[in-house]
Amino acid sequence: MSILRIGVIGCGGIGAVHLRSWAQVADAQVVAVCDADPQRANQAAAAIQGAHAHTDFHEMLANEQLDAVDICTPPHLHTPAALAAIGHGLAVLSEKPLARNPEEARQIVEAAEAKGTMLMTAFCHRFHPPVEAVKALLDEGKLGRVVMFRNRFGAHFKGVETRWFSDRELAGGGSLMDTSVHSIDLFRYLVGEVTAVTGAFATFNSTLQITPGAVEDSAAILLRAEGGAIGVIESSWQTPFSANVVEIYGETGAAVIDYDKDEARYQLEGGSGWVAIPREARDRFAEEVRHFAAVIRGEATPRMTGRDGLRAVEIIYDAYAASLP
Ligand SMILES: NC(=O)c1ccc[n+]([C@@H]2O[C@H](COP(=O)([O-])OP(=O)(O)OC[C@H]3O[C@@H](n4cnc5c(N)ncnc54)[C@H](O)[C@@H]3O)[C@@H](O)[C@H]2O)c1
Image (cartoon, rainbow, N blue to C red; front, side, top):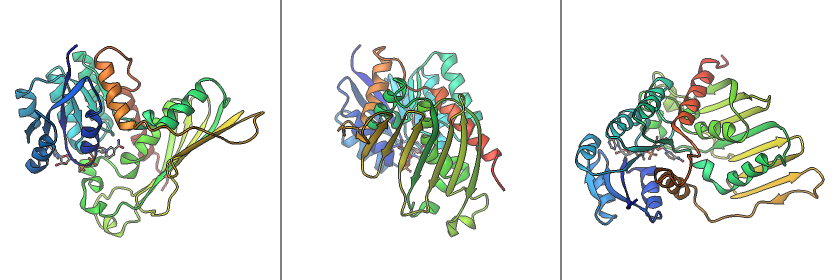
C-alpha cells in the first residue's frame, strides 16, 4: 500500500500531540487538518509539508482524498465527526471518551460495523511501555490471580470552569468521564471485564458548584471484575498534590506503575524484593498512531476497538447511576 493519507480533526492540546506523533510514522502522512479555529488550522497545516487546512470537517471529508481520520475534538463532536468519516468509508481513530454517552458511542460502533470500516478508541495508556510490561507479567501468570487493582490520577485543573471539560453538554461528565475513562480501560485491559460498579462523586471547585448541572471534579469508583478482582479508581481535578499511580496486587506478585516518577516495579513470590522495570523511551502516543496505521495496512490486529470505547462509557454511566448519595 502507498503512504496512508490521514486527516486530523481538532488541532488543540491533544491534536498537537497526535500531529507530532504522526510525523514519526514513516508510512503515513497527514494531508489535511481541520479546526473550527482558522488560525489553529492554518498553523497546524503550515507545520506539515503539503497539508491543507480546513475549518469544517464535512467540507474536509468531501474534498480530500483520505484513508483515515484521527478525531481530536471535544467529546460532543466525536459522534458527528466519526459518523461522517465512516460514511466516507474511512478508518477512524477517536480520542477518548468515544462519545458523551453510551447511546452515541453505540451509534458510532454500529455504523463502523455496518460499513465494515475500522474504528479504534485512542486508549493511549495501553501503549505506555510499563503498562505493556505489566500486561506481559499478568499474561504469563507471574502475579497470580489478581486480587486488587488501585489507580489514582489527580491534579489541579486550573481554569477548568472556562473550558469544555466542565460543560456536561459538551463533555458528557466530569473527572470520571475525562480522566478515569483511561483507568476503566486499564482495569478491563489488565484485570478483566467489569461485572459491577458503584461510585461517589463530588464537586469541590467553588466556581463549578454554582453551575447548574455541574460536572464532578472528583470521583471514586469501586469495580468488580469477572473472576472476582476488586478495583478502586480515583480521579480529581482539585488535588494539586496527588499521586498518579496504578497498583496491581495478585496472589503471587504485585506491580506498581508510578507515572509521576516515570518508574515501574514488580515483586514476585520467591524473589528478593522489588524489581525495577527498565525505562523505555518509546512514546505511547506515537506507538498508538503507529499501531492504528499498521492495523489499516493489515499488518497488526487491533489492540483496542470501538467496542472498548463503548464499554468504558457504559461503565461510566453505570457508575453515575449507582452513585452514593
Ligand atoms: N489521550 C489523552 O491522554 C488525552 C489528553 C487530552 C485530551 N484528550 C481528549 O482529546 C479530545 C480533545 O481534547 P483537547 O484537550 O485537545 O481539547 P482542546 O480544547 O485543547 O482542543 C480541541 C480542539 O478542537 C477544536 N474544535 C472545536 N470544534 C471543532 C469543530 N467543529 N471542528 C474541528 N475542530 C473543532 C477546537 O478549536 C480546539 O482546537 C477530548 O476528547 C479529550 O478527552 C485525550
